[in-house]
Amino acid sequence: MLTVPRQVIANTYIGKVFDPAFTGNSPVLNSLFSLTTEGDYAKVVAGSSAYNSDFITKDQDARNALALTIVKKYFPNAGPGTNDITVKYLASTAARRVDIRTQIQLQSAKVGFNVIPTHTTGWPNYLNCNDYDVYDFAWSKSAISQTGTNPQYQSTGGNNAAGWNDPALDAALAVFEGNLSATGITTAKINAEKILWSNYYSLPLYQWPGMAAWNKSVTGVLPSPLNPNVVWNYWQLGF
Image: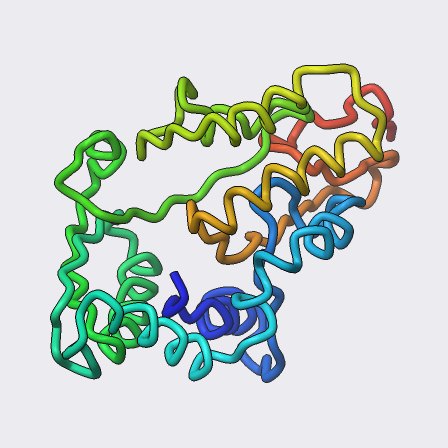
């Protein structure tokens, strides 16, 4: 996870895709619960800072160096190009996903990882298969439920394809099932994210930009934060 070049990925496949002349840094996603467009995003990221700082404050070379330090505890001879550690990577055949995997492969090789990709259109069918060490995927929020992300991380969660089982995390996620204030929801997210980041459960990459378009004669349109967004506020639309 430390070797994943998130900034390069965001710049190349978000920033430059939407603006070929783009030269800055496109935002990466630093929360596993909140999107950048949500009001509590900054608070959640800041509240988890003691656990996610390696991914946010260090540049790629520094993260690679940290990764190599960790790797050498278990593989003393590991280093650039040694291919000491095999990582089986499951991903889709979409060209963008293939390119992203290549970027990850190049950086991972610098600390001794041999990333072996398997690209298939049927990748969702293999998420529960232990033949693979890592996989990537895209998701979008379709509801504002407090428990909307629980299935990904609960030990009994329907989307917990990795088979994570952590009683402390289950307890943190159970809090979302209660009646919470806005502040309570933010606190619950932070508590859960601390566990996820400290255990290297998952690494968010970027938030895909949203787009909304309508005829100039239509009024009252509010772009939706959810998927699908076509009928978000239909009761307010007018001509």
